Image 1 (spheres, rainbow, N blue to C red):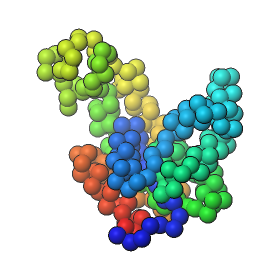
Image 2: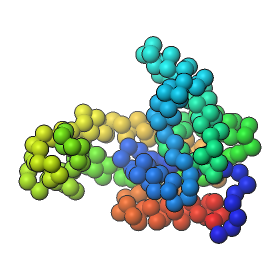
Image 3: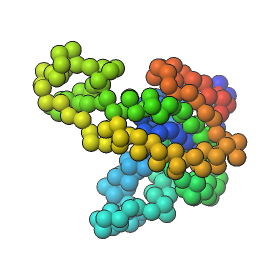
Length: 227
């Protein structure tokens, strides 16, 4: 491998609900020594730690509002200054719009950094609908199942703890998943175009086995990091 990068890496994972961003980000984090950051986790941590931006976010959320891009970007800036982010980060779920992408570019530029690569996990909508809408979990122990890919050995009874209390998330219904995918494509299409114009976008087929996708991702990122 070459020597360490002179500036921290910033990797962006793009992909619709169910594409496996979280799963792959955790693997990449372990493989490359990068910190996985998601918007939800950033907000919760900033509020819990009562940072300046965290207090601003808490005030908005307490009032029932949506935390704006400016606050989210400020929270990200605070997090990037932490010692554990010295090697770089993987952004999972941020940015979601070109406006957020521009704010991220400005934030990184002020730190002498830039986006390293943006990877779009490409999936088929119909397959995503089938994958997500078939999910259910045991309400007693949390073990996850799927109507097609991982059914319980005994119908309606958890393999792990024997409970018959199964539940499905309301937002995992097929019509809800379909609506989320439509919203994702409408919101993110300009974002992928943004990174494509900058020469930073890489597309990866994410319809295969998790291990195969992880191997392809690792190879792609190793090239981007010149390792």
